[in-house]
Length: 472
Image (cartoon, rainbow, N blue to C red; front, side, top):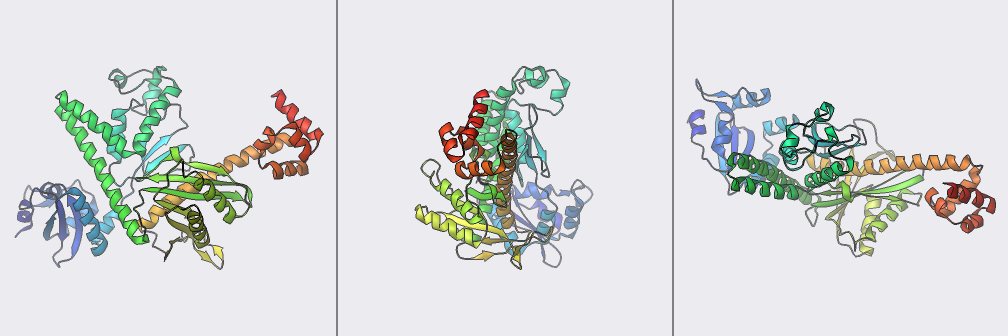
C-alpha cells in the first residue's frame, strides 16, 4: 500500500503511530488523541504527498525517509503516553532521540524585583536571585501562562506599565491598572500570590479553568468554552507525563513509593563559619517555594550540620507531614546518617543522596567534566549526563544548594554589618568571639539581658550594648 493510502486509512482513534524506513528500521514513535489527524498534520496532499513545509528541517528529513506507518490502538491518552515512553526507552528510535536533543524546554519566570511583576516564558535561567522560575515544562507552558492571565487580573503586557494609562484589559476586568495607580503594590501582590499558588499546584488551576468553562457554556459562549477546554487538556497531559516520569524514577532507584512530594536538604558554610541549612519542597513536578525552610546551624562539620538540619525537620513531623522522598546533598555517609535518624524517629521514608564524584579523594568540579553519583539504600548509580532521571535529581539538588547558598550570603552580609557595628563601639575582636561562642548569633547577643552579657563579658560591654539598644 502506498504511503498516502496508509495515512488515509488511519483510524480517528487514540493510540501510538510508528514511522518506519525502507529497511524496516524504526524512525520515530509518537502518541495521538486522533491517529488520523495527528499523522495528517505532518503532510501536505496537494500534487501528491510532501512533508509540511512549516515543520523544522530535521523533522522534514525524517519524513522523507518514511516508507511505512504502523499503529497501536490504546484505550486512553494516558495509556498511549505510557506505551510511547516504553517504546522509546526500549527501542530508542533514531529521531525521537535527535528531536528530543533539539528541545530547550521553557520555564515560567517572575521577576520579583519589579514593582508590579508579571509572568513570562524563558528558555534559560539567569543568576538573578530576584527571578523565580517554575518548570521546565516539556509541554503546556503556554497553556498555563495563558490560563493565569485569563483567571488573574495581572499586568497583561510588558509595555502596559510604561504606557501610564489603563487599557482595554482594565475595562474588561483582566487587569487592575497599576499603570494609573488604581491598585497598591500590596494588593497587587495578593493577586500575584494566588496566581503563584495556581502554578505551583496544577490541580488548583485546572479546577478554576473547569469552573470558567462551565460558566462560559452556560452563557452560550461556546467558542470561548472550547478554548478553555483545550487548555485544560494540554495542562492535564503535562500532569500525566510527570506521573510517568516519576514512575520511571521509582523503578530505577527501587523506591517504595512514587516520589510525588520530595524534600531536599543542603547546608552551606565558609570554612565552618556562618553555617546554614536549607530544605526545598518539590511537589507534583513544581517547586513549592512557600514551603521552603532555612535554618541557622551551630555545628562546624558538614556531617553534624546535616544531622542538626535533619533532626530539626524530624521534630516537626507532627506539624508538617513527611514527603515520599528525601534527597540529601552528600555521599553514602550522609545517606546512612539520614536513614539512622529516620529510624530513630520511626519515619518510614525513601531516601537517596547525590554527590560529586571524587578523584584522588578530591571532589571533581572541573567544568564540563563534573559527574554526579546517586546513592540509594542498596545500589550506587553513575548515570550519563543526558539521563532524564539524573537530571531530575540534579534539578532538585541544585535548587536546595541555591537556596542554602543565598541564605548563607545574606547571613554573612548581616554578620559583617553587625561585626562592624560592635567594632565601631570599641568592642574588641576577642570579646566579640566570646559573645558569639556563648550566644551563637548576633541576634541573640542583641536580645540578651544586661546581666547575661555582664556574666559572659563585663558590665562595661553590657552597658555599651544595652545603651545602644535603648537609644535605637
